Length: 440
Ligand code: AVJ
Ligand code: FE
Image (cartoon, rainbow, N blue to C red; front, side):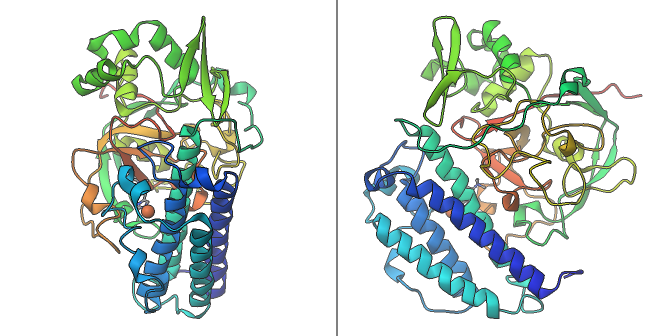
């Protein structure tokens, strides 16, 4: 690995694994046993399933695949195989109870750290090269920590999680230009060098992207309210036909968790009902809602390539950066990540996280819907398992970029790709808009 010694790499892997486990602990220790085993929504697993699934994946990859150990409890593999059992049926499986799930995950972890301290991290095959398997397992746990936070958002009853408020918008935010021009030309999309990048982010390749304009900031609740108040949810012309069918079928009138009380729109955020914060990025919208808003605004969603070019391309050097602000890992000054706050920051926060062209909040706050289907890059190779991304490629899933307040930095970077069905809105999703630029 270029310039990283094994001790630093081990320290990084230990740190990523411990950070993930501490988050898992916080999300599962704050509710009682009954709530851990309950299904809070048919869209989600019981929290106790996520907990043991995290341990089971760690066992599969670090103890069995990397270290060649025997299965600790071979009889539970099928219960925690996400492909054998869709979420809706997980509550009826013979799940480990909360204490059993905790001690199973802790037992696996103890053994995994022993493997980490003895496994060679260079020259012993692609699974362990640069500590990849350890980084992948830490990312997997953090992805489920975001999933479990979604379950918390869907759960009813008083709040059990608390966090400090995110930073305010900076005073200049209102003076920023509404959109930024990204000049047409090629850029490098994806990566072949980021050691813990997952298979779908690879390989790096050139893309020509025609000139376009992109919003400086994510679309705010205030802007989205104008769409609602202008009758956006009553007007089929703004909607994709399947989006309109969703509106009619479910009587949609606003983002998920919003409710009108008299003349005020309120929303529920982790058990607390509050007036919709106008300055925050809109949250919990489907791809169809994002698309309809963009059509109403006379604009469109950015393609995935446009989003990544806006986030990574540095016109001064022609290079693609790891993050909008450069190659340095995220700090709390750059972006709202890691469940440090339990909501997005107002649009116009995090000036230090801006891209070279001045686009803000691309990383953190809310996942941003793009117009693109989830497809492999040219030269894609499934690694280490087809079920991470390959089986989802096609026209069913839309790509989201940038990460939300709920995702840890280890599972979020300029190249990171997330995907979901266009009807989904329980995820921490928002968006920004774009438009074509006239060719010069
Ligand atoms: C990348 C968020 C779409 O949760 O379905 C977790 C991540 N994959 N375990 C998902 C994942 C396997 C995945 N997403
Ligand atoms: Fe998983």
